[in-house]
Length: 130
Image: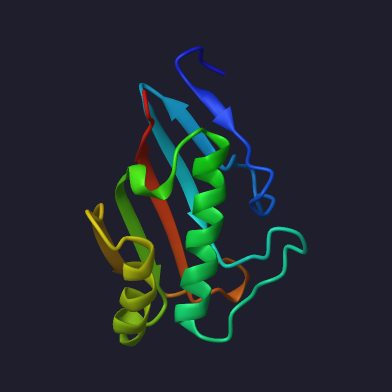
């Protein structure tokens, strides 16, 4: 691995379901891999609704940020991947509860499917405190 980047593994986040790390720290930034709504201990998909699943995704991202010494409040951009754009409003409500003040930039993208049958996935780019 390049000396310009450092892999970050978060104890409180679910294990990766493929050949990737939870995040990579580089140049004062943290690039977080996408999180689907997996329980961090069991690795099982959780949440009956897309909104509940989005909450779990955000909790997983919080754990990844914490492992790098940051918080979700340090996020500069989040990408939301939705299997059904009809769930956008419900996901927005949950998302807003995590970013009540000064939310990051964001994009929402409709996708045809996500790993493990998840209905939502989120990734983040985070400015590391310095």
